[in-house]
Length: 552
Ligand code: SF4
Image (tube, rainbow, N blue to C red):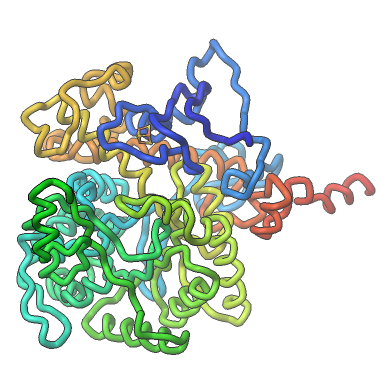
């Protein structure tokens, strides 16, 4: 089978370190990677990577026209030879105004209160995994500077050794201190400039620990609260790996499922002798005591009412790649409860630590889940419901992924959620910062002693390496620029490439603002994809109007 992505891309001069996924990333993405996949290199050279390399010396040809199988790579994007739509008020439809830099990428989501975003992208939830903690500054500051929503994942308070949680007599703890959660929120808010939002997730343990109450008391409506049903990578709760017995015991005391049980003498002995090298901390499954759809609905509505009652004005829901019934429940309940956003995460996405074969084999693949989400949303819309705004997630990394998924879910999709892809600039920037400023290496979690050849080919200093550096310096000023981690600069640079690429695709489809994108802007590259997505085959789209022209 011909795949769109093979290990090397000669046209762009990129090369994956490992095996390649549908997203274009490696199955295993390493924080210490010397490169150089498309996302890694784009985090330094930005929009330059929209084009084949060695201009003036080459011609280049596409290798993604075979379209076997059903995936986002089997969708293609429309282009029209006439017309234009969605130009802002101060522009006309003259060719001088209809240029791709004039495409507006601004979007908004929400039921009563609209939250704006500078482009239709948000981060996946980065929670209690070590990698989220280590590179948080890059993700949060980068996201705030770009002006997009950033999501703090589950369990951040529960796993924080320095947090203090009071007695749980009323089944909800009272958080006395949550320094890691504070750091995550405050880092984002420091650079927030009116676009984007910080979203805090709530799972079973977070609910017990009183995370919602703590967040609303301390931050009011600066934060959005997110109910968590699941994710694309796994159908059990989140996990982390723990390499210390003492920490494993701490987590067990905090109420987590820790495997193997660190309180058992035989397990402690096994750990001391080296037979057991690590523990896995798991979260609980939600809604285990609710056996009917109506009970889940009642519980969901009560929870939303409670969260509104304690003061949250904006509430979102994230669901995973469960089957059709849960998808319908998520869309219907979120719509009825007038939630602000529903993120639908399909299989084919990524993880910090999910069981590998579970991730490979469970759940509904992104394109199928998202196609059904559109179908179900349309059923509610036909009944006159104001359908909840949606964000699609699960294996997205490139600008065409943004366009295709926005079009597939139009008009309900307002954002596209990216997890692993946007972590790469965090890793890369931290490695570069640590190599250039060795005294910062530990603080930024850099993995390199010196810059590798793949980076030196781009430059030697931050302002030479990151195309986005000067633009950001102009916005932030020279002084503040010193506080911006290189990982955030890399994220900003990557977002510029993705945004510019999306603007080009939209201009080609003659759509100059996001609300003009419809399902007509994509077609299916093969018949199987047409059946599964409801997006007609490439040769069927406009076939009738084409014949009318011929017969006129
Ligand atoms: S950054 Fe990650 S996805 Fe890209 S080449 Fe390196 S390991 Fe692979």
